Amino acid sequence: MQHQDTETAQQRGSRLVSGRKFNADELQLMLLWLLRDGPAYGYQFIQRFGELSGGYYQPSPGVLYPALKQLEMRGHTQSEHSGKRKIYRLTETGRRHSESHDEQSRMLLAILKHAAKKMLWMSQSRISVAAAAKATGWLPEFIQARKDLQAALLTESDPDHAEQRRIIAILRRAVKEILKK
Image (spheres, rainbow, N blue to C red):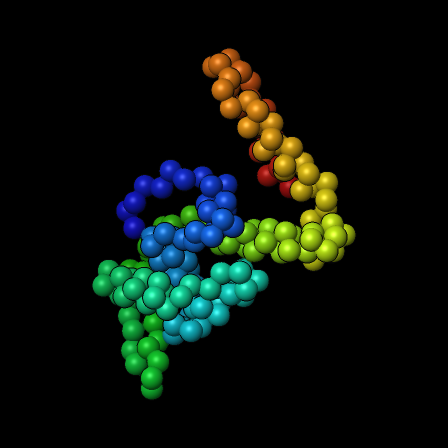
């Protein structure tokens, strides 16, 4: 999990909605995050991802169990058999690793929840925008403003350096304003 990830949150969110899910490192970080709540077995992880994503994302056993095995090999988890199930627990090494990647884990979970909400919006908007707004809590104007920003950035995808600096300043001000609560 030493991989340097230059992919942005927006790109990760788009990847989720377009059908590609998490890479191995990301899945392992989320598994460690979930284990911070207590021990779990494989199916419980699948259920938890389903809950977090509104049923949109549930890793298959073929993806989940190799990730859990890697975590165990790295000393981040321990497992024990309980009947037919294998229960995974977070080790102190795993807890420290998870805590040192807390911000990344929170972002991955936020991306998962956002992708689920976006999928819900898309499915409900086929019925009506009002149904989508009711299901997600997102105002139609909120969705349109996001689309407008994306369109504006796409139309300005080849600016000179002076224009890039102007756009950067605008976006940084917008980010500060959005994060101000």
